[in-house]
Length: 576
Image (cartoon, one colour):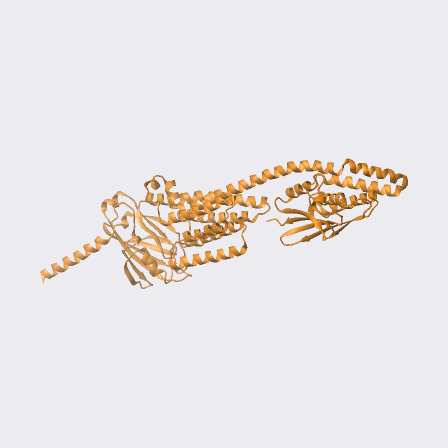
């Protein structure tokens, strides 16, 4: 009988020794208990055993399928020397709503309020640290019990860390994980304000608004990362990172659509593909960010097969974003020693998936700055040319032969028809007044332009002894155009289309569509070919220069014979 009892005790001792050999030993170096298959899981208020020997992955698989009260128990072994030698801390990092941790029957920390419903549960923080009092620890086996509930967020069931170690180790890791996000958030915030300023100062260009939204989303993402790693977020808030990352890449898609000026149909197809990739990645558990990064790159690549020079840098950065996502997903450089030589380098490498977007932000600022510089230089050249044109404007309209012919006509009219002479002097005075008033203005109302044309035709009617008329259609009068554009067309029409006492009919018609505004100046002169309509000066060059200064690259000027005269068409595209 005694032999049997002795044998039973030996078996129990061996079983206990074997069980203890499975437990992790804390000897002063940090260990994360949930990564080891040592947890027992219980559920409900009556603590029904669900399973044993679980790690964090298996715990999530079970808990995420049901909202309930839960409990896990884990154990570790330590020694008296370790207990006496250092302060031991526990770090709880989780997206579980509420939890309470006990050690050897003592309440160690309470994070939120564990409840039995949505109403009674209160969320805690995403990261909590607590020094373990030495009196709570025992030599040998120490048992941790974690009570938690997941009523607010059933899928929030991940223990990212349930670790014991030095406070300095935990804080150093938080510093590593939050240094890069803190720096990146500053860069994204700066980029946001730059694009907001550009949006309001450069005719509210849509691409700047979209870039501002993109960088604001990235700022929120980085700020959230910084707060998370310093324990300043709610425990279940971290999950929204997935949504933010998806929104970032969707907004990037919109930016490319606006920047590359592509058709709306392409964007619709791209968005459908994007949503499909996101849904499939979620369903199959594939790396979301990496797959989503491919969509904008392929969209831009497909859209710029005939690559425009200014878009090469954008395409290159999009490729860089994809590469960084792949490198980060598969930890391709984290095994190299240089990564851990400095906290800053380590932090950048650990957040390499966001670094590509930083390069994109800097590139877009550079592209915008280059575009603004080129535009400024073009405007400076346009202003210089405009100053020359202002001189040509006055010079062209006060020509010696025009004055000589007008004065000779006046000399005869004063003797023979004083009333008509008075009318001509009044018209000549009015024309000179209008042209001197308009010469220094970049834009004038169409009414002033039409008035000057009518006055000039009155003078020419008296001078030539014929009937010169101008009719208008679709002109409201308050439209703004460069000065003397239509007046120059009238002058050219008179010079090349009529001789002697021929009556002249001019008509100015305006039509507006969704895409452009069209002005047509017609005269019923006898010119039938372009060679007969050669300008005798800088008339057409003057018009072209004025239009370019007004609407750079958004205008066309065409002229040619029509059935019963000559027609010149000025088309101005709607601004983008």
